[in-house]
Length: 245
Image (cartoon, rainbow, N blue to C red; front, top):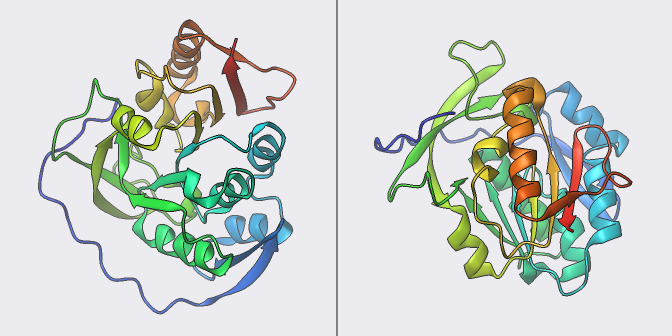
């Protein structure tokens, strides 16, 4: 498990002038940066970006849900949720400050500026330390950015220090009852042992390729012991839907 560091934050270099174009994904106009990487650009321009997660949100969210999302990306899932619950009922966290800036532009572009977004990594209460920061590694393909990339990995272009917030108080303050999580393997540290008693449903992308089967299976076992069931009819591949049994 990656350690949470408590050294001073590093200030990321200011991003250069943004170049890209606007594409349409579902009901939303989304900025596609020229620097996103070819696989990300293809997924966005083809409409396949986060397709399964969007389908699950569309099918299973309720109008009275309050959503906490971990891993904002370009904001498509947050806006998909907001279309059902209202933008003020969606809270989202992203460790990559550059992609978060683009997501916020997308929220404004699609008239959903009320979505609350924070630049932070979340940690469960059992691991959280006040004033903590953690190292976060930015990938050439932004969706592969993650905490636990090995040193010298060829896809990593920059490492930042990002503030850490505690998951359970954020859930309580937002009164969240739905959790959406896609954080490239960080889910096993975040969710295993976390108190999710107020959550009725989790839309979760798992990453066995990054953290291995043992840690992923332990996380799933822990969620089941907390009272969640895996909805096998809705889950597919690495995308799992957990609902209270």
